[in-house]
Length: 320
Image 1: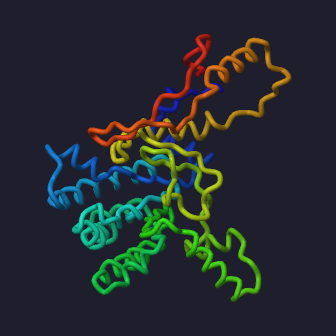
Image 2: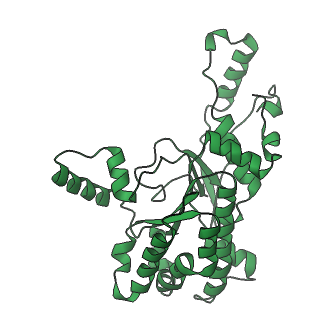
Image 3: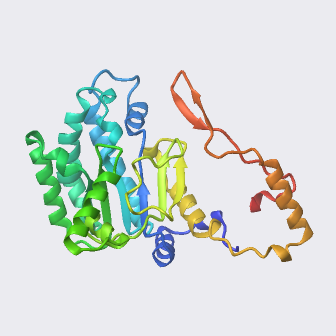
């Protein structure tokens, strides 16, 4: 491999975008986590009481997710999945005042604020929502939010440079609604639906499977992987908070996806003795390593992964 990470990091944004548009990835999930912590730790001096932080979080968090979406699109990504609301945000542990604010001013910001609408138009973004948002928002007190969702979908439907899907799921179970759609399809057509049929039913259009999934902290996809689109995704998890996500991090992921994980088929029979010995050394050193094992730091209730990979002393660090 002649290309290395330093070379990739030093390319211009337009050069990276050209590579990504030519070779992929087309579909990326940015499953943000720890966003409330990000705002409080960066903008406040101590943990606030109640929902006193909400307006500041709404403003700074909204600006940050727009910057991150822009960064993905600037680097050539066509379709981005992220999340408006997740099952955990419907938990009472978030506080009594959280959910009503999230379902009103929070959702209204991403669907109807001038800042978001301007971004959608300038970047040619077609906006869609997926999940059980319609069932939740049909409650009379949230009709205005649902109307804004429908309006922004209609308003951006002719945009074709990028696609942005906002996930809205109140429950961990995303399988039952899909099974219900499959039953309806069978009754209507007299045959079982294909995977592509189900994708069109669920998302309203054809969507390519996820190429890259980026989340935060513990190594799991939980209810944040878009249904029906998993199966070939490369998974990445940041140690730091999602809203601190940076261009160097994105480029490291893109490089890994495009180059480091796309190795040639190995011809083991032709391996030189030195390479065979290095392979032996690597797997012996890492015989009991498990990526994903972590530890909880109790005072701050911070879970973090533990280092696992050990490298043979003979390895050239540039090749490791």
